[in-house]
Image 1 (cartoon, rainbow, N blue to C red):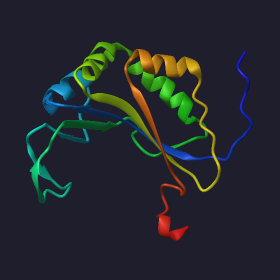
Image 2 (image 1 turned 45 degrees about the vertical axis):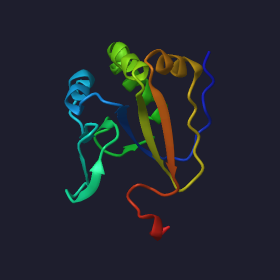
Image 3 (image 1 turned 135 degrees about the horizontal axis):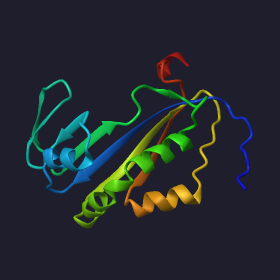
Length: 155
């Protein structure tokens, strides 16, 4: 029996998949992840800002990320825990790839940006944690104390 949470303040969230690898090319990360990246680069390539300005030096590791939520999501009607369950199930066939990333010195994770003006609770159950561990996926929660559609200066 699952105990139902008490009604909490609504919040906003975004979920991304992020992968770091010491040498795997970002094109190979894209092939294995099965999605197009929003941001990606390969180890050894020159560093640039998001606007294309050279930053000097080369990337030490490969990086790849994609947004899994098409827009900023509202916790009502779908709480972040339910969205994470869905994404975990969706990527369940990629366990061997994520395990390889870890074995070769990299890491892969779901990144969750949480936005709220009020106290919120994210309740990750052991069953989800176990599935994430089985997939070799980490979970990064980043809380921002304002709504996504507001700037921090306006609060």
